[in-house]
Length: 248
Length: 235
Image (tube, rainbow over all chains, first blue to last red; front, side, top):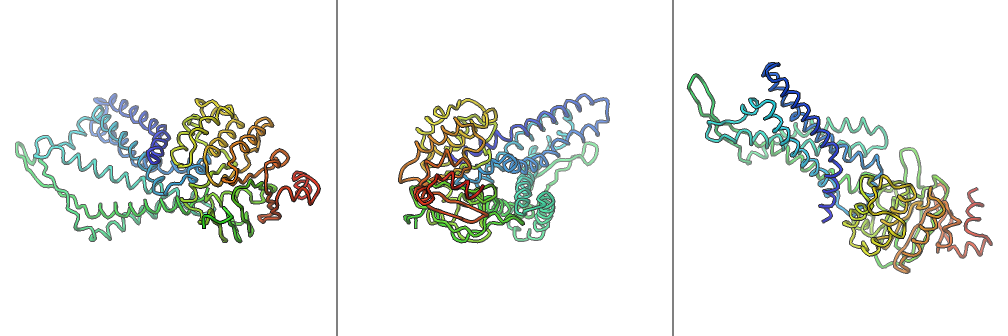
């Protein structure tokens, strides 16, 4: 009940930045759709991915400003006075951003289909044995990367609150250090997660005129699992900061 | 020791913000079931003291116990805190604000929460952002008094409020007070208007407790009102 109420509050609170992004993305796709046949197709196809590339940045920024707004409007005094564990508060905020991201990413894929259908078709493997495997795993990786971005966004703000002065620079340093550490440690510790089964799927490609080759693509999941494990630890740290360390 | 005489026990509490000392060795015990007036000039540490009890600020050193426990998630469930600053979500309506807060507290009194907005002349459908300063102050009080929390911390609930609203706020504090069950700490500069409700008065000065005495004894010993004493001490 409490989590649901908090989640609803967060979803309503992030409606404005999500709506803003949706409007900008739609305008962008309409503009690109008007350029089809005028600009080089490759340029249009490349530019059509721009909103999808910007979306994880939006998610990290929204996660950061979701907390920032609580302090700048003094509502942190209400939020932190609630008898909630820190991970509940951090979780509701992160989930609201992730839900917004999911909705916006689906909207962007729709826009991509409108403005640059060829680009989208390249990801899909209509003649292969698993036509949807490649786009599914690409989207899954993209979604998981955004989970990491959201948790890093929250950590960036909370780390800045841990120091009495120069909070902006401290947040900046925290962002770069934790991002570097996540991916560095993700690579270093990945042997620990070698037991996680790799993802394999078969794709079909043209290797010559009328010659089709079926090949197997494999994604090494150990580094991904390691980064996700570290992200879970960072999320727990965010909860600890919210519950025990940060002040109003 | 949740059943001790004191709901709040503070020993040697210091709080420093970078180079500013907000609290400088506070020793204070608050008995259960009384209304405390927390008085002191600006910068004397009243807000910091209340935030520390509410668990929103960590002590630099010293000890704070609320109902025998260090401030934590568990003690937050026992404390109704009204901050001096505006801490309401401006995009919510009055009704949404009440529904939002009600979800988190087991001691939320739905009947009282339904009756108080009308007494405070608040329109449940109005956006918080559209309320006047006085209306927002009254809404903050509705949020705090709609709970049957054993400890109610009111930080300057009369600050910047017009006299009729102040009288209404004081009437509701007295009216909703659960004699013997609740402890209220009421910080204010409007001593004259509020002193009638105080059982005990705590004077803070430069981050320390300068005086802690029953309001009655202060009046008898000094042969003046708490307001006059306050002016004599701090003017």
